[in-house]
Amino acid sequence: MALDPKTRTLVQLVGVVVLMGGLAWASVPFYDWFCRVTGFGGVTGVAEAGSDKVLDQTITVRFDASRDRGMPWEFKPVARQMEIRIGETGLAFYEAYNPTDRPVAGRANYNVVPYEAGSFFTKIDCFCFTEQVLQPGERVQMPVTFYVDPAIVDDREGQYVHTITLSYTFHEIDLPESHAALAPVAKTGKTLN
Image (cartoon, rainbow, N blue to C red; front, top):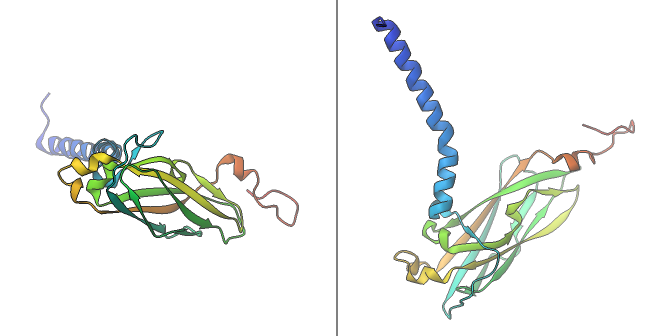
């Protein structure tokens, strides 16, 4: 079946649009997978326990905090930096405060700079693994337990890293259903939805 030139051009154009849409849709999960596998883009590793090897060499870890434009919380690191031995388990805290009169849920995105250190920065436990819900006026300290993998000293680029910055950005998300049921009560006595 032969198509006239106008119809063929239309079919090709629709094909290009569908292909580009498919590539755009697949790019986010593919990039996320790529970053997790390679550590590219400052994506960290995750472990269930600390390193079994601790070196005498130290590294400085800096902590940074920011909020998405619509996030009403106050959010900051408790300490701006720490110096730890490579392989030693570190414990840092971030503080969040909800100054509003309503519960607010949030999720933290993170990255590590410089990017070549991402695959060597390993989290054991982190508040960023789950969503956080703060009640009105609630202030919490959220821990992150981590270590810097000793393999960094043998890496071609990693061996020159002496300071790592761990950065979190909090974004507001919808309240989980378990917390939505606890929404504030209006003056009528009915639950607000």
